Image (cartoon, rainbow, N blue to C red; front, side, top):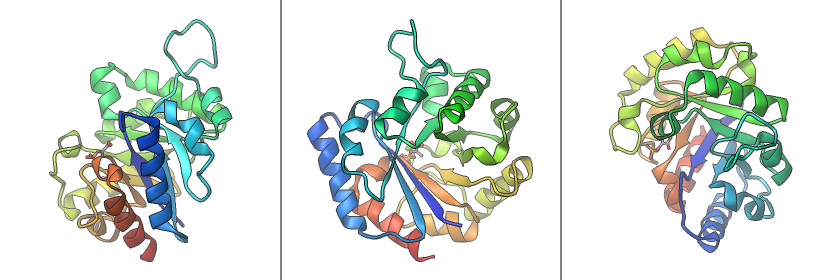
Amino acid sequence: MKKFIVANWKCNPTTLNQAKNLFNSIKKGLGAVKNTKVIICPPFVYLEELAKFKRTISLGAQDCYFQEKGAFTGEVSAAMLKDLGCDYVILGHSERRKYFSETNDLINKKLKSALEKGLKPVLCIENTSQIKQCLKGILKQKVIIAYEPIWAIGTGKTPSPAQAKSFNVKIKKLVASNTIVLYGGSVNAKNVEGFIIKSGFDGVLVGGASLKPKELINIVKFVDRI
Ligand code: PEP
């Protein structure tokens, strides 16, 4: 099975030009990747332009609303993202839960609408207790899970490979045998080996390091060789 690398650019960079340069530097540096699925998730506003260059890189959004259209000012629907050339969407990221008060119930609705419109959701969870409610009424193998301990996001702190492995095992017991489970939280080119080889994750979700082309390329190239 292919390994997955999801790059979450969050609210970066500030201009379309910078986004194009970043995307193209990553694409050029990666060349042909055989065993790894690389998914870049830029801010919504860059998706349409980046879709023109994507080729082997897949595009994902960082959120979507659960209604398809209508009087929901400021929202972007799964149908709109699919139309732009997006194949994936991150849902339930801890920053959305913290700053935008997203609940498991809301995330469940977003997951259902993403699946209905043909987007593959990457569901972020901070702990195993969030899985049941988020996945209510959803086939577990249809969703990619990203386990992201809050204290590890953007802090440079990471769980030991043994700690991460015990979470991976716990999560795998709660999902389907073929559900893809990723690790996220301060992943870089030096520590990625631990999460894949020692902890047995199917890939990683990379935040800060995905804005540094060399670092992201090194992460992908390492994972692709495994
Ligand atoms: C994230 O955005 O989900 C994330 C894991 O960020 P970072 O890699 O910067 O910790």
